[in-house]
Image 1 (cartoon, rainbow, N blue to C red):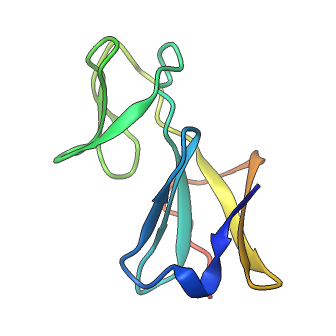
Image 2 (image 1 turned 90 degrees about the vertical axis):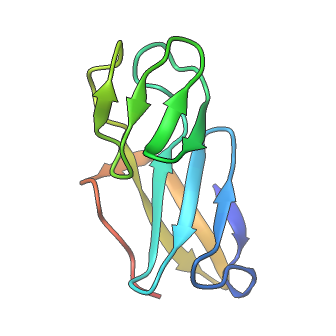
Image 3 (image 1 turned 135 degrees about the vertical axis):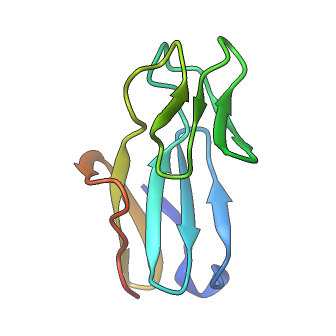
Amino acid sequence: MRVCRLAEMDVGGQVVLPEVLVMRDQVGLHAISMRCTHLGCGLVRHQAGFACHCHGSLFNELGEPLRGPAVDALPWYEVRSSEGWVIVDLDRVVPAGTKTAV
């Protein structure tokens, strides 16, 4: 999925979509699911990481569950830049913390 133009995403920037959060930091780009692993409800950013308002699950910045009912971590997805676009492949899960240098 095309997310945005790479030139539009500064270091420290992020794009929040219903399915995924894409962030850029000093190291590179990374993408994490914005769907709770309990029943798939949408997540919101929270001071500790991510929160699910459907059933109260909390996840840290790496997507690891801090409070249930969710017990599984949020998946991270492969992200890359191609022809000036930031691309996220929702079919390719990568280890938590994986960042793509740009």
